[in-house]
Amino acid sequence: MIEKMSFVTLAGPKTEIDYLVDHYLSKHDIHLENALSELSSAEQFTTFTEENPFKAMLTKSRELMLLVKNPEKATISKINVNKAQKFIDKIDEQIDDIRTEVANLEKQMDALNQDYAVLAPFKTLNYSLKGIYDMEFFKYRFGKIPRSEFDKFESYLDPDINAIFISTLNDTDFVYGVFFAPLDYFDEVEKDFHNIRFDEIAIPKKYKGFPNDECLEIANKKTEIEEKKKQKEQEIKEARKMALAGYPIEQIASQMHRAHKTIQNYLNPDFSVTNGHYNVRIPGKLAPYENEVIKLRSQGLTYPQIHDIICKKGYTGSVASLRMFMQKERTRMHEQKETEKPHSEYVQRKSLCQLVYKKLEDIGTITVKQYQEVLKKYPLLSELYTLTKDFCNVIFSKNPTKIDEWINAAQKYDIPELQTFINGIKKDITAVKNGIIYSYNNGLAEGSVNKIKVIKRVMYGRNSFELLKAKVLFGELFHIKFN
Image 1 (cartoon, rainbow, N blue to C red):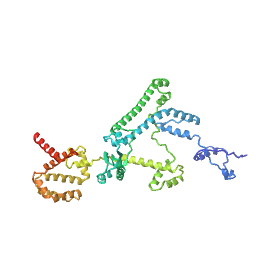
Image 2 (image 1 turned 90 degrees about the vertical axis):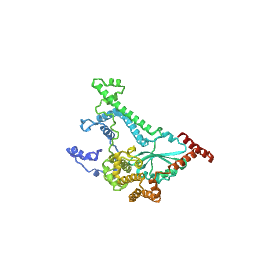
Image 3 (image 1 turned 120 degrees about the vertical axis):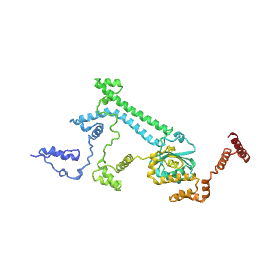
Image 4 (image 1 turned 180 degrees about the vertical axis):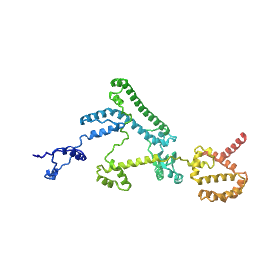
């Protein structure tokens, strides 16, 4: 006689139901019936709300596995659920204090790295941060300007703008610096800087000294943290050495002034000073769909549209999780792109301008190799340098016909500034040729005019023609008498 079985509730992953039927129920003389046939109406259906009682333990065990070196080589032994739970709780309790201590050190290191990254571009600023913060009549902004915009900086801004910009670092992508403006004009100046894509950088107010000194202090703190981690590693070696010598854990703990539990952790071969959780990403609900999300987003689909697509495939998370994932992915891709970008050197425009009137060996901010690379990349620059040196030779050649040859050679370059210079020479060609032929010049007159203007500026506010005349004549007498 076959009796009907009573209904039983089976809770577990749906993928395991077939396994349960094939390996257990099918071995017995059991008749499986459709559950729907036993229900008189759909009103008897209720939502199954019971949570997996082992979910928390499973999550904790996965986190602990991240701390194990080479988990694939670990020995696996069968134990029941209660023993497994007690074992996991015990291990988690033992490593909790070490994990917390090392995590705090790593958080401090991260905070210092972030502050250093903010302050480093301004290390050449020769002003204390506290002095800048305490300015009474001026406001300031630290930030960076894209290189492409900075090249237009001087021509874009009004020469009479009520602001000062101090450049502190020039790299391949940005120019870092700080601008100052009076309180009454600050809003107007700030708009001008925003128009050239000035990106503000917030300096932590806890730093008050010179940026370079603060960076050195941060570096010292980072060294101290590294020393603490090394000290902890040394303690672990000493504890293990004492244990091999036969000392009991209680005696080791007493001599090293550490807790019994800490010494147990030190003696664990798999123990590491670095927290296994740190910077380790635990897979979430979105993990199986990440590549698809990136692909769909690159095709221009909105987040709600992507959410609808992957929900049909089993995703149970929110739209906000998609946005957060893509934001982190963009940051990761940008950092990867920056690390893969080939290193390039930046040569200051000021150094290239100095080559017009200085020798290469007299300029300390550009090397011979950099100079050769610049000329190779910009051949026109090489021709202009040659043109400039030829002009210098013409001026001191005493041969006025060479200026005509130089003008003919320079006119083939379609450079507005150069053409303006040539037109100026043509308008006053007789005077230019006389300057080449004769050694006379107006330097003496210009020097006298400059000297009189300096005397006037020194006497500003108490000047009169009689006093000015007396001081000029006295200066000439002094010059004659002592020279």
